[in-house]
Length: 202
Image (cartoon, rainbow, N blue to C red; front, side, top):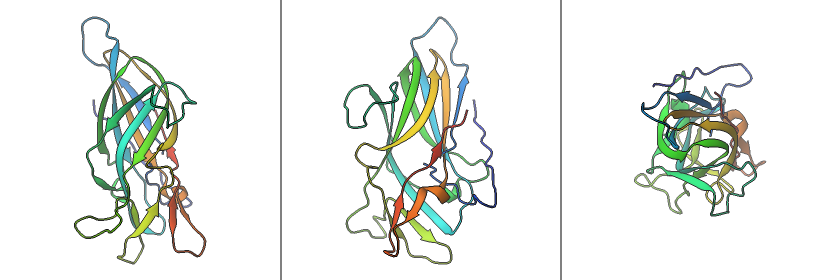
């Protein structure tokens, strides 16, 4: 089944990215036969137009899910993880319903109440061959500015989501980042912090 997501654009929200969130979950018919105790979570990412940026790059390492809404990201138990090959994603290229597929994760059937997004680290000495993992480019400029991602690499960013995975079926989830609200300028320091605002939409 193919998921279609239509971005909603408003004058006050012209940059929705990473979004790391207006996200979608749709249960789709899986295989046939008898009942199964395992289903599949299929993940993708999208965005909407931006305000003040030409590019916003993020690199997602893992997506973690848990049936507990209160589980701490540092706890080793209760988590299922989808590891994602390193790929720098320009959120601003994911507009008008364009999706970036992230992968699929087999899960025990049940209700899940937490998703965490784990980002890659920025390299200490970025170069053309080894660019910043998480960065932005201000409109009308070409220089990449590193995005500070506190807790993004350790426990991961916690996304509020509640969805069901049914045995023998596929649940499609789209992570829609709101970049205008996710990027925060740190005063006059010239630095920018990433505090993802992401929606999970059915």
